[in-house]
Image (cartoon, rainbow, N blue to C red):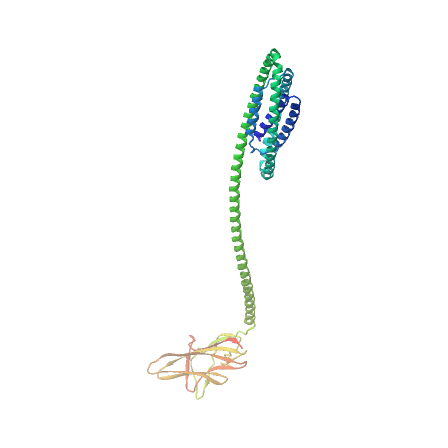
Length: 417
């Protein structure tokens, strides 16, 4: 872009000079040169910074130098030259202003450089078209050179005619020298501008490097972001898996809890039923001792034992008057007894009866020793309501009891049926 600005400036400076040096057809050449310069300026304004036109500039500059060295000016031409120089100075100032504006635009273009990346392809296509146009302009330039050669021939003829005007030419030469001095100043200004443009180009290259670094950093950040997103997705997937697992476990726990609740409800129902059964179940239990008076002896017949000392009689199912236990409810009952006697070469007998039928019988015999002997046993019986149980001893047998309750009869309800 900076090179193209320099090309535009030189074209603006050089093309009017070429037009002022010709007559007749030279005026046409000036018009065509201006048209060519305008077209070149318009084309150059659209070409990207990568187009290298330095070779064409050097060729044009060499041609101008050759023309300046070979041409001799008439007074009118000198006047035109001075006018053109003044015009060039004015245009140079305008170019400077445009250069400042261009620098501002360069800064703006740098800020939108990223957006222009996408447009580079189209611009490159335009550049190729401009290169083709430039080739056409080269052909036109060749024609201009041919016409310039003809103009040089005419200038030689004019030099012959102007031999008499040597004195005036000296004055003109001095004025031309002054003009050349002015041109040198202009060239110095142009060189300074070129230096500024070079500096700007350096800054642009620096900005491009910074942009490349930023793009590299952006790639790194994007990679890190992609990696972070992948890690987050992995963690999220793991969390989702864990959540699903927890949901399954929760569902299993809920099912188990439901089952436990059901079992608890059943258990509570059973407990209530048991409590109700226990509450409503008859409470039957008794225990009684035989007597405090010592020996109880049967005569010639079986003796129904009456355990007269009631120790416990819950439900009043045992009678300490008759010695019979009468079942108040249908159920299973457990009975136990222990009886005692002081034996010396004699027998001790005891029997249990249910509804007058003997259930069990035990006996003990002591030979030659005088001491307390005991018989003890127990049995579970299934009784209907009204069934009775009692203890008996056979004829001629005896038992012993005293305040120590050595002989007892006990029983209780296990459960109803």
